[in-house]
Image (cartoon, rainbow, N blue to C red; front, side):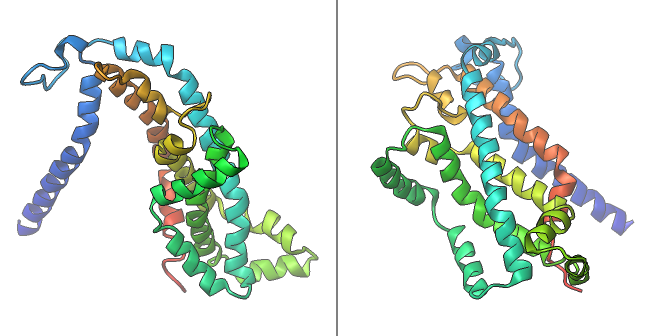
Length: 273
């Protein structure tokens, strides 16, 4: 009885904590359905009693180009991250080049640098090269966050690949590149999905780099598209929240679909035989 009571308490506590964390998401959905005339109502309605889809119509009319740009930047960031991080992770895990230890420390430190500091550095660099206000400049900037994380994930995962598998491929005449391409990558699916997911989510939700490096470009991501509804004397909150809801859908779908791969990818290398 005590054991069952304890489990029920933990269950109730877990449900309450989950509801508390998800409340901002619910409120975002509630406001997106609230008519503009009721935005300043006090107290606000806890439920959308008179829902309107004006905000979502505004998203379809105004925000699709921004969503397309964010998708382009996200996919570009994933591609660049995989191209750089996968070979680097394989090198650290299996080839063990000189300086591998200090390089791992550098990658860890790189994760601790605030994004605004990196954005200021990129601004000066891009300004000198004339690369500001370009979508591919944002791909490069976003990749600087995703690549160190990706290298560490790939290195941890690939270190668990049996050396006998690589030795057998080498005996059959495969070179380093062939082993990496035909042997290591196919068995690194979980790591590839994990790195791709986090790289896409970072690029999709980025605001600091976008606002600093592409504030006046023709192709701007959805994080800047929300500014379309913010003025000095007017804020279209239902359209703002509707945009946030729509922008959350791709990330939510990807997280649900890739959950089991991510769970395996982020825990790879945690236990050594």
